[in-house]
Image (cartoon, rainbow, N blue to C red; front, side, top):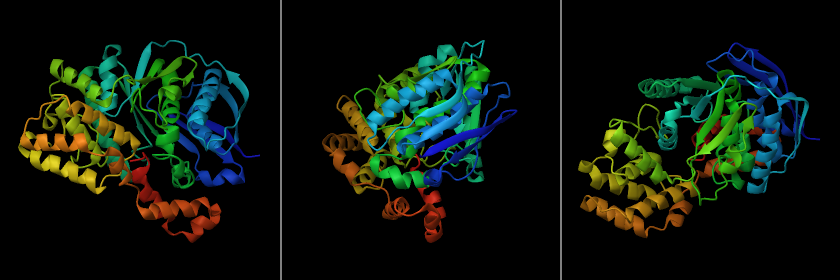
Length: 439
């Protein structure tokens, strides 16, 4: 019977480590590293049933994809129930998931005692900034995570420093606390192997399409227990009316809980453009120099040429803001070149687009129809976007052929043979890193 065993928990100061043992048929999905997470608060007094939550939040979806059972000594009762609810949602969303059972020797109600705090997963992008604006009266702890889009390896040290500095400055200006969490949450999993097996079933990647709502929220559990966080928010990426197979949705995130903490999928009733409107109001009322960080290519500012930068700049303009004043090299003086570059990139397939980007450009197009252009260049772009076939633009883009070949080889080759026969395996890990988020 396929199974995964979680054991040998160690909480040393602020660092959590535990071992993951899988039956031979599942070993290919794990690198052999122990799961680790480091917080900026001591977790030595956190019960083992809560310490188990971060690793279970990442292991259970892998188990469910293979019909495997998971074994752990102790688990918080609230989270055990949450896993059943999340599993039901994911199985109804993804046909390739099979399910499985969590077996625990003991379930506990790990009441943390005094609470009253709230927390918000925060990057400084459009979605998390809009959620901060919505909940700023609560003074939420701003939580940033290293382990997904910023890897735990030394190659990303500089990016992590940039994010920490930017989030710390944002928090200090508003008198709120921060929490920085570092984990090997994807590198203890063999993420390229997960992509190889399951990318063909999803629009994005494994973590974006299956695991990140449960994973990111669950990762915060020991810190939330230690700091008395009763309400934990994760900003919505999509909005009501978008039915995509995505790993963070109300029917996942709103089910995640453990004793003392409820999690919330925030802002789902607002489209991305409406979130930008909310930010525009905040800028007008309180923070005229607010800068956003949304770039897919860098963490020390916005490149201004990737799809996400360009999409955000256009959205800011449609909400009545000057993109150049909020972190984007996109100004009225250069509208002709900027809009022409966006159109060319969309039409040529230069940008890898998924169905979520199609919905976001559709949202922008809806606002374009209500907006008077400010220049001839803008008028031409608006006219083109109104008539653009967004489905065709999405289908014209895609991941590079050699990545698809690597994934096909991995699915059908025994793991030891695969790693021996394909010297491109390590290169694939690096190359596929760019699409870990499905972008």
